[in-house]
Image 1: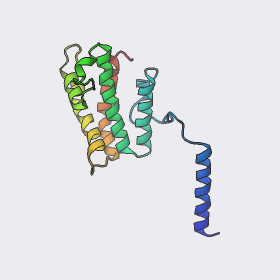
Image 2: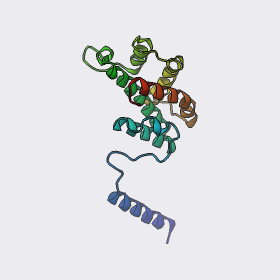
Image 3: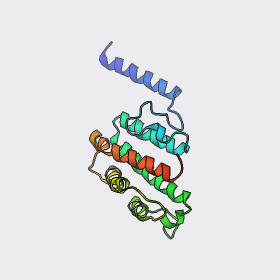
Image 4: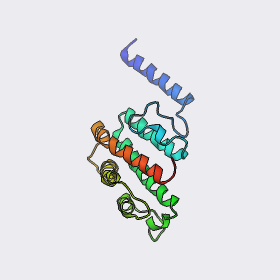
Length: 169
């Protein structure tokens, strides 16, 4: 059998298996926790748990832009959770009722007197935003593993602090 025919057979088999066993509708849990410890979000909100699985899973597969964008989304979501917990969500919305962009959410969170955001969290937020923004919006930026690795300590601080402020943990 020629190599081409063998490869053709492998492709047909792969396609057949994929057709009969598609990926789960709501996504699969990531088996590892290389970026965010799942314990930080376990038993909170299903969408937060799924975001963390996506962040960890995309990192495991080497899809670093996807991981960075999902990190950005998690940070946005947690900031909104904090504001909703304190009944202040309207203060971070535009006149049209849409939530602010992340830059403005970070600014509002950092200056809010209702809680005392730590110095470490205030410093970490812009760094997390920058990589997520570049991965989401820059045509020529392609995130690398080291970009996510450098974010991990900041991310740990932010996730735990915002989860606590939102009374989710």
